[in-house]
Image 1: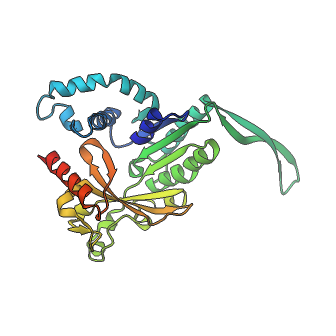
Image 2: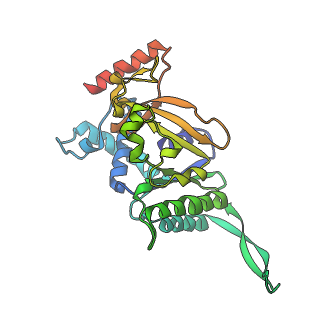
Image 3: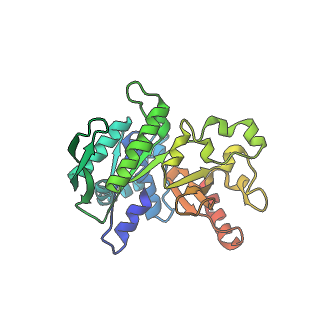
Length: 306
């Protein structure tokens, strides 16, 4: 969410990004605190590092220096909230669809066309207006819809969770993508069975399309499926197993991003990432062959832990 916005703000381009983040797990206040911690970290090149809990003065009062930096970021976040909308009060599939459809209609023109329908039994012809194409007011705007996460959706009356996920992904998200050219992103966790003892023994712990929790049908709808894996969570000492990264050093500060599926190729590509959960920060790790950069990062991580 953060990097596309920073890119369009810092580059000489007419592009714009509009993010609608449907947070089913956290309140919008919590998401904004995460954004503040991320911004302070980025702006200070990693020198100002505070997590959302500390920002609330839970353990001790926040330092005045931090508060001053938050205050100095007001203009940034005034602009940020023009590009990012956190929604924490809509949790059902139709509500999400209706919200985005209303945005499309308010920020563009829907062109209709006449289609003739013939009744197979009677031969009677009827004319109906149907959707032809959508013309956005700003053709350079990228609209990103994030639903976080699928298992927390509220089913419509008479539906199960599985039905709700299918309706959102296979119906509403595909319509928003194909009709309005929006970019839907569905965050989905792995099933509990994916982390079973049997899978651990067989070394099948990393995310797979078959291991999607609550509904495996979503894989059919997506253009790109990305899996994020934390070896430290499973007490793996080195990953990949042979000549890999020292997980016992990185602990929770490492993730592996894998392209599980892609309609345009590139599947099974894996990228190691440095991760700092306190400030929602990801960055590609240096290759194992680049010892100098890897040692610099390890030194940086040691100082953060202190």
